[in-house]
Image (cartoon, rainbow, N blue to C red):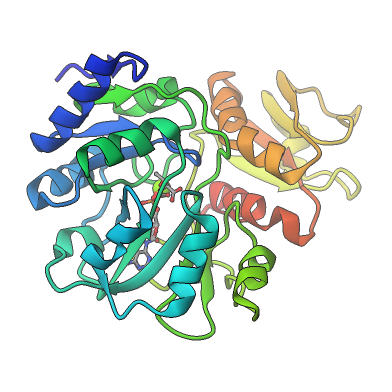
Length: 324
Ligand code: TXA
Ligand code: MG
């Protein structure tokens, strides 16, 4: 299969992307978080193709992307007031709500779970595609299973070229990390995946606290310890403590750093990372992909700060470095 590269600024090409989706084909689409691998959520056969293309286990549930919050009721039932409040405050945007699924929703989407993940994405290209055609698409991140999530069309093609029908090139993603996922099926609401929207922001809208994610909370298949992984082994360490021996001995070291690189290390590749968490998050997957391409045998990432603003980054760094 040849993967078409479509330019959404050309109306014909955006229309072609919609037609492919309506025909049951797979199209990678830009979102404000990461690129998603989309299929028509009303077509279970098309959705099943996502699992084959990604090499993803069939019991890992997918998020359904909607044109607007009104469409929630097509997919979920028993929607609590808190979910409507969050939808109103943060959609379109990087927030996924877990709700009780409507009976007609295919178990192919939900991995057999009684819940469904829903979000209204903010990327103008995807938003327009969904709105114009009143489409809903199931879309996981557009990467091979467990690998780095793509934040550009080029990165999508790096692992999925020839495995999917098309990629719609909407430029670089503005957040670069996946959406915050909130379980809204029971009180208190719980974050199951940290992301661009913080517990504090959610609590601000609800007027009561939300539960922070427990580390590696394995609530469902799909929330796994080893995830978002570069091909090269990754270690994280503070530059204030003694450096890990593997890093000092690695013949070809790549470094993602915040403070100056210690003189005892001689990297073949290094990248200065931004000091604020949102900018760091935007660059993380790209930097790890670049470090992979540099031909290093180890990637050393200088530990980011420990405070709450860095939770989403820490979640990805821990999973990316996990060797079980
Ligand atoms: O920002 C994002 O959320 C991106 C873009 C493309 O929208 N999507 C994304 O999808 O990150 P994915 O499939 O890579 O990760 C979604 C995670 C799953 O691994 C699963 O843990 C959780 O969402 N999830 C989805 N549906 C769920 C459900 N019904 N119950 C519990 N967890 C669910
Ligand atoms: Mg993913």
